[in-house]
Length: 200
Image 1: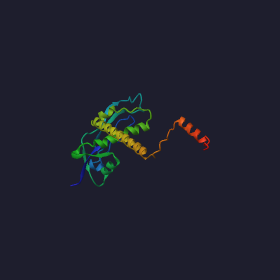
Image 2 (image 1 turned 135 degrees about the vertical axis):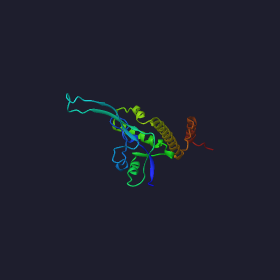
Image 3 (image 1 turned 180 degrees about the vertical axis):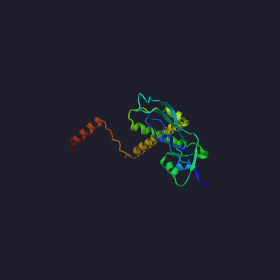
Image 4 (image 1 turned 30 degrees about the vertical axis):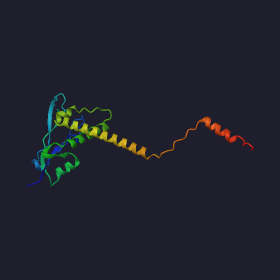
């Protein structure tokens, strides 16, 4: 029997021009009889704006559509021609966890990267992630895991910084404290040193 594996689509690997989730991976043509389908993702038409072919013959109908992502693992071939293995390597697909559970940690890291990449590419353009929950029902859980990751990384960075400061302080050479002499005492010592020796 051919070897298989359970995978999830990685919705966060690509965002469209609206900032909506767009990460989809097509099935290998031979696995679906040449039909254009995607692993754990479906192209959903939201609305169609019809154009008047007489008034504006040059313009086509406008279709508003988006991706909808499954919360269930999908079983795909694990082996030659290595199509899905390559998609896993590239991050387009993510291996399922034990018993087919969603890989929330990997999804959370992908979500954080998607936001960081968007902010770097579109400076000053706000990214509205509210739509993500409609596209991918697990997005709220993924966002919670992403927040926990960021919190843990922040605490680890703060701890490392504190330890580095402590090491730097411990490695500083000890300086002998300067003795502060009383000015009156110094003056008396100077007078005694300048006084001529008494003759016997």
